[in-house]
Length: 623
Image 1 (spheres, rainbow, N blue to C red):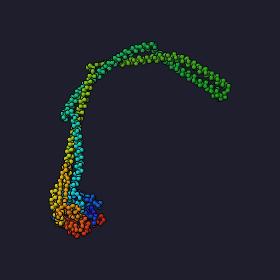
Image 2: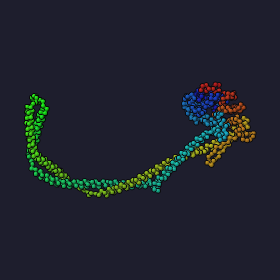
Image 3: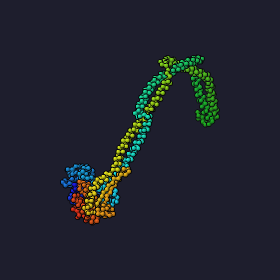
């Protein structure tokens, strides 16, 4: 299966690419550095595997509508594969309208290789050659050799597995520590079971619960009995209190009756009747009215005297006739003043007489007040006597049962309550202990499950880490004889006086960790001795590596008969370039070979030649 056509739009440096390839020809792809030669093959790897050394396939044009198509010819039919940048995971097989979407695994089966195999067998770069030629250690050469074989992914996987193994080991140890702590916690809980097994302890809890229930039922009975006795006790308390009240009422009644008799005898001593009381009160009211009238006259006459005094003292005109006040008038005014004083004296004398009468009647009035006060007291006491008579009619009935000693029943109830509380505390404590044990047991069970899972994951990752070198070395060891034969055949075809010997060692350390040992020996066929790197020229090393790569490609032998050699002629002199070109042309008999170079002079050395140029930021094929 070979590539017959490559079409691309807005991918990498190609705005548009559409080129047909002769599947039976070898091609030289020439152009300046950065012109887009390698990008043509980046398009192939991206369309086939969605892999590229470019970071952003959506491109250098800032567009998301890029797409690429590869047409493969298997000798009879053409297979068309398309991938777009807006749906990079979608692989379209065929051409409209006869298309179907397939998975990457299906495409790998169609072309007979995955990305790692393709890059190992189909894309050979100067970088790989330089790395192998300049590597001084066998370990380093082994790593590059593994990549050439397409098993370099194992070294990358081992690096990742190493980190994964360490993480899983930490998680496993952490889970074990947690499980150990939970196991100790479970044992601590068991210590509280008093040498009983968990199920026996559970039975003890049930027995305690039953006893607690019996005590509680007995407590309820005691409470009912106590409540009944308390009700009877309260009835007796009420009865006794009422009896004491009745006794007090009777004693109070006798006392009040005696007081009434005493008050009535005092009242009769006054010898007053209602008519006499009324007459005395009327006389007192009359005296009050006369005193009030006399006081009014005294004030009136006193005011007149005061006015006359003002006239005498101030002089001026007479307030009656308006004439000037003279001696005659003054004499007349003085005479009037004397008359007024005599009138005032008369009224004062009358008040004096009335005052004497008032004192006499006041004593009567006080007796009347005392009389009325006694009458009210007698009425009040008689009223209370009436109330006492009504109360005495109430019949007191003692409770039918004797008064109980409530202290005995209260002590029984308190004793039962304390016992119930004690058992409840025991039950609750044991339930808590059992729940703590079950909780610890459940957590321990979960932790042990987690430990088993993490232990499995850890030992799987450890096994992989320990055995990947073995797997890689086994692969090389199983194929080393064929590889040696093929490499030495290609070296013989170009008349190089060298042969290759590949050795693998699987040494076990004391820790049973496998060491990755690999030896790639070069032997001089004429001198029959090992050849040091210093004894081989740069051109010979490139030829040696190409012979190795050819052998590896033959060993892998993917269905895609396609090989691209990127700038492998850069460090060669003219004579070695000729040898390499001859090797590649012979290689093109069974393979579709592309040689990428910035040396335009090699264009005529191959059947077909393409020149790649750059205009602005876009690549294009000029011829």
